[in-house]
Image 1: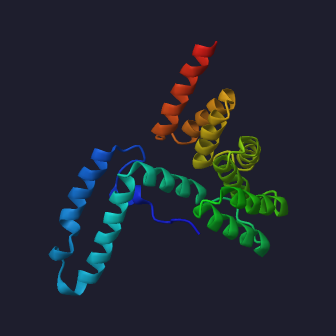
Image 2: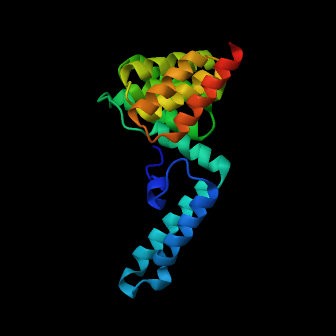
Length: 206
């Protein structure tokens, strides 16, 4: 349903890497991976690998495409998987609608999945993301609260929840989500940066 290639891992860069760092890393890898350097029997495999590296750098050095990719990756994080075929169907329909930009329709399908299996973390997580994109922050917050309750150690989920809680003006909730994300993944510099920004914002309001 979603992009399953980790472009950051493929290029060997962190998720917070700058555009220049990504381009520099690509150039270093491309020199060794270029198909012209491969022997004839390995040329097809080398070409496929080079194309994948090229796709990765093209996505990660384009701000809009990188944001969309990061959202997809966060939605694709493993969580509790329902064995209910109907839930899977709703998730597939929701994913297709999400990628088509029909966020309200996507949210509707994810909501049906969550209703059918209230313990499926993906359904609540995806519902939160789609609802936020559809402009329904109330539904987004409610869904993400449910997802975090079910899977409190999922760093990608915590970062998504923090971002949307912040968007909804719920700074205390956002702070806790990013704080938990940093607790479970101390290398999550994006979460740490967001946490510092929120704390500064809350201090200004005090």
